[in-house]
Amino acid sequence: MTQLVRIGAGSGFWGDALDPAVELLERGDLDYLSMDYLAELTMALLQRQKLKDPGAGYIPDLPTHMRALMPLARQKGTRIVCNGGGANPRAGAERVRALARELGLHGTRIAVVEGDDLLPQLDELMSAGVDLTNMDTGETNFAAIRNRVVAANAYTDSSAIISALEQDAHIIVAGRVSDNALYVGPIMHAFGWEHDAAHVDRIAAAITVGHVVECAAGTTGGMSSRFAEMPRMGQAGFPIVEFSEDAQAVITKVEGTGGRVDAFTVKEHLVYEIGNPARYLMPDGVADFTSVRIDEIGPDRVRLSNMKGATRPDMLKLVIGYEDGWIGEGTLFFPWPYAMERAEKAKQTLSERFERLGLKADAIHFDFVGVNMLHGPAAPPLDHDPAEIGLRVAVHTGTRDEAEKVRRACSQLWIMGPGGTAFGTPLKPRPAYGLWPTLVPRSFVRQSAEILEA
Image (cartoon, rainbow, N blue to C red; front, side):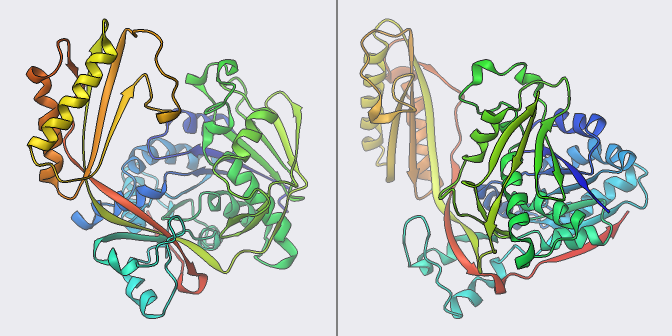
């Protein structure tokens, strides 16, 4: 009977470093390697790729990562669980199967987890009278953006991941499961837990731990307010979870790697991206972060215990992505002396050019880089003439042609701008996407797990 399960956090986002994941497989003695690739806007971007090419829509990093990780995982007996399928988990799983065959890893069982994509069901939801109010803005007129929708993905629980593991999957390629479902699923499978009253607190513990480690180096010193103390972050080790059957867990990392695991780094990520700490709502359950006890029990070893929670909610979060016009932007730089005066003159000149060009803009935003780009109106006034200042302009427009006017106006400052004007890389207009987060009854979401054998 399983007493302890070891899970490595192999990725925290699309584009994360691969070498720490390889290191986890080589030296981490893992049962599972969980890899999170998705952010909310990611699904709209991937869905747009899929609309252009039915064979696309999964995370582009997936083949590269699996080429490096699959042979090691099969050798070590480690199962990989990822949401790299993005908007097209079937195509992603098929690509992984082809790669396994190419690498001679015959017999590898790749599971495709589907069911989060509710784009085909949107009209059904509307006809059924499901309240699709925007959770962020309170807007209720979803019909106004319906014809611009490109993605609609529900955050699903770990049920299909558990099903895939029960079918002896070696690699699981899912779509928009919740981030911590990548950890909850393996833990529930390892200990035979069910989504029932008897396991509420244990599942809440798995959710809590999954939340702590899901951003990989975010738990081992990355993003830390104590950044200056963190050793060799360029060689940071990704975290490992040692989860025991009594629902206690130890967070650690491979010995000798960079970064640090201590009570503070764990607490920093425990409170990252949450609302009510007493009710962290996830598809698998509700975790109470106020109950958890955090103890340092050794170098780079932190124990989490006394984790509590409540039963899983009846409603699931549904994130709808829609086309929302275009962005035109540019960046210019100005030297000492009179750097601020030059930047202000360039802003004035650009504003006049926009008017002269008849720019139709929904919003125009200027930042003085090095002055107020991060703090906006809260930034203190300059009391000196800095060595250099950047000016960034970003404009939201309805069409690509209008956004192109912004790029042209910026380039025209070559000769219309103040003396000493320099330029960043010219930026082409790019499409903008809006997010409409809402809730959907769990009954509308039907997950599945299918095995593809290499």
